[in-house]
Length: 431
Image (tube, rainbow, N blue to C red; front, side, top):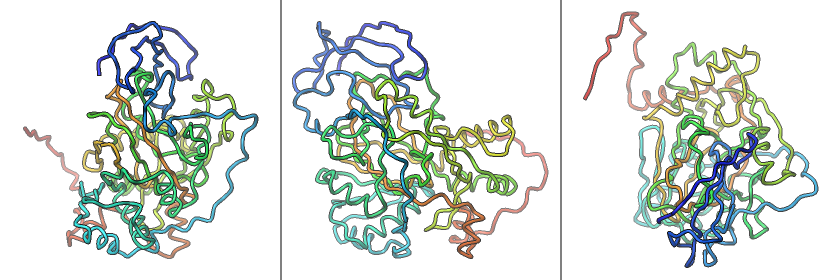
């Protein structure tokens, strides 16, 4: 796609999505860009990916766009809804076969296979597998597999309707209704989040760092999301990948003293900044913003594994810790998620792909490298349980919470590493 632009800088208050404007060629001929500027050119809005998921600021993708019913929409409201109730969450992974054997048999019977991408995180289901054909037992096994692997991918889910996607999400838990983000234009899908970017929403590369973009969705909720489903309707040919980074492996990478220290801490997760960033789009949010305290290390109720549960998107500070110390620890953990190459999987999307991830144990980030291409998806986000601390898990279940790396060593018959010998470690070099 060729775009001719001329930039007009405009200063606006900090905290709004619109940072400056550009003139950009208006798409014609069914959404394909003509490459020429016209008198009624659209206005480009510079957006901060730190607080942006999707809006249509101009003409959108064109009159003949096949997914127009699912473009982002912000209905007018006269008042906010009340706070969310507490849900009775029964994790479906607890009903799974220990090795997700029924799901594996379902896949293999159709000529596919379950293939891990990295040792620690990421699995792709290969073959002609239709998510809408999964039975209850296969769905339960899928919940376990996602909890174990962090994220599971399916290609070519073109036949998956939004109704079937929502039904799959409801199997995992009550569907979350986002406090501020747009929902599909169709009007009856309040529990669906629209992920959208086009030629009118240009990432402001001066407004964020890549490490800050790793997050888990809406962790300020009392019962943040668990098993989450994103289907991409339209994707760029190249770019706008998504990365998932494992909280299991972040925890396992730390020293025992650091692990124990973090297990003793809680963090404040706030929705106020996200709500403030939306005031230029909608004056009255679906729900008023809240802050919630969650443990820094949580235990997954199905796997029993410990996971670091903080992210720069919503965590404002650690509770009971001086600011300098809190800032240092949170910055360190932010970098751990962003830098752990062996604990981070990257997915290059194709139209119709579905990613199902466990928001309790992975942080994720999109790349913002494909402007002005169109990217459009629908996310269904079931609630998980209120996060469980290590102490709470062990006292209520009578079981010891586990370390991912220690469990892997046990499965391989590998002895734990010896204690540090206290000697200088010389730096080595590798080509």
